[in-house]
Amino acid sequence: MLSYVTLGTNNIEKARAFYTPLFEAMGGKELFDNGRLYFYGTDMANPMIAVGGPYNEETATSGNGTMVAIQGGDPENIDRLYAKAIELGATCEGEPGQRMPIFYGAYVRDPDGNKLCFCKLG
Image (cartoon, rainbow, N blue to C red; front, side):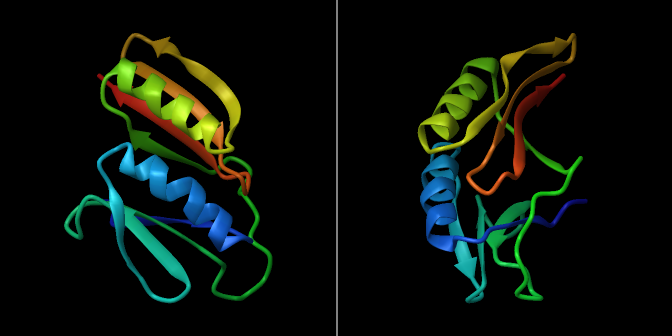
């Protein structure tokens, strides 16, 4: 159902320095760019995350209540992704852990303040 999600940034070089190695740690890569947005994923047939400046050229802001949840695999891999994100400059919004019987997750904010969750459902 999901095609892609866009995360706004005010510093594309810093955002790419954060997201490129983070997504590489997940088996993803930069698939293409349109000069404003950089699209990451495993291939064009699966959901992607785009990073770039807003179309209206105004300041990018993180949405209050907005979060992107990313399938992180098993709990050990979620722990690794959380640590990688922190290493790359993210801030903690909730350390890795079991949140309910069917959900293991970890929460960070990227350098622009966008909230990410690495999780396993089920």
